[in-house]
Length: 70
Length: 182
Image (tube, rainbow over the protein chains, first blue to last red):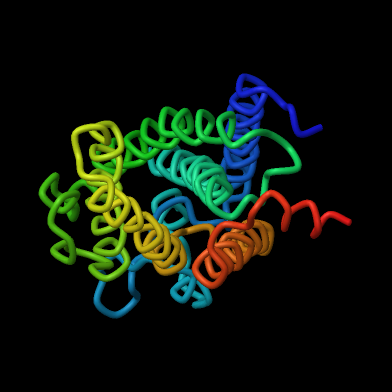
């Protein structure tokens, strides 16, 4: 087993990256179908500024796209 | 663009994790059971061709995104903590980008740099990876997802343990690694 050649390791690295990209695309793309999920950074309800990070998504404010769509 | 930025950011993180793992394996012998050091080194150098373009795409998509475009300038990709929103989260990303550029450029110029200087510069990649993780944690839109969070925290934990083992014990000799496998 120790003799796995470099080309096989490189191929594995490429495959893992492609799998990660496809999985991420599938996961993030799923948000397009789910209108309740935020597609954009949320806006802070008080200041109106763009806020990032998971901490801001626990609020009851609607996602920006939802607001725009309605 | 926002979706593409998120996808490219996640996949760049995955490619970077592979790069860090192969880099750590060179010194910790953690992949000795799989391949020779030479093959792992070649793979480590090759992974730069994966994470650099994906990281660049992440930046390009962010700059082109209509929502972020007004608050993020090209200068913010170079100078940290100046962005119009999420200054700490984006600043950490910018700082890690700066460090990775230094590490990548000196990696290509390795033969022209003194070995000790190159080694210390290359070690900055540990710091850059830690800052990149904080950047994703504080600014990433997907960390609230249990799936993304579990995978990323697991990968970060494995890499952190290997990094600490590398710092504490250095490279295991071939005899030690054979002993560990028994």
